Length: 306
Image (tube, rainbow, N blue to C red):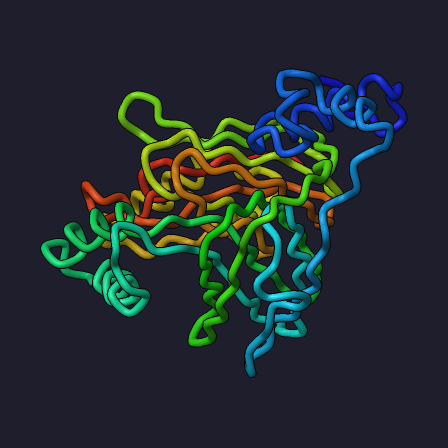
């Protein structure tokens, strides 16, 4: 797939079509045109589909809010998130399942962070079963804003940023929109019993990437700057050494933000503008079978942003 921004219109359409298809066909204008390409669906209505609505959100130590209507219509929506905080702020979006309350979900979350595996493991299993994660953003002052485009169906969502919780209600009718173009795909997969990232080795520093969770648990895609000589082996050796009680230098030098956790089967488009250089993309959610952070077990990938 071409990633040249000066590519032909046909190449741009293919990239936009890829985003639409993997976001669940959100650009299909009506049941009568299901199965057509997004471009064809738009032309059959005689007009081009609009871009998704953009919700500008500023995360501060005092809190934040979802702008615009609440409840809001279902469909694609782009959360454009910034922060004045140099230490970074992290906002995730989730919804409860199987009849549990939000309070029960938060109890599971805190139990899942326990250092005691006998407490953490059953809590992680229940949390991943009874809470669906939809993504969100981790942002830092110097590299914000970050944008994430999500396909939200009718539901009650909870945006959680530290101690700050905001409710976002989504209802019918569904509003159709065309997703942002994408420069490539970041896949989370399970191979040989382990979670892995599959990414292009070189990505755009100012890029738009479709993130697809094909693994067996919630995953995130957090970008951390590393030295030019750092490899995946460097990062894994560090995690292994820490696990064995050692205190080696940390190769993860700077955090610049990224996508918060998505449940298996979920997809989102992440748009960022990071400094050029070498990065490790990681997921730190815990493995329910071991209670270890999944990054420590190999869920990381060194890439170059140019």
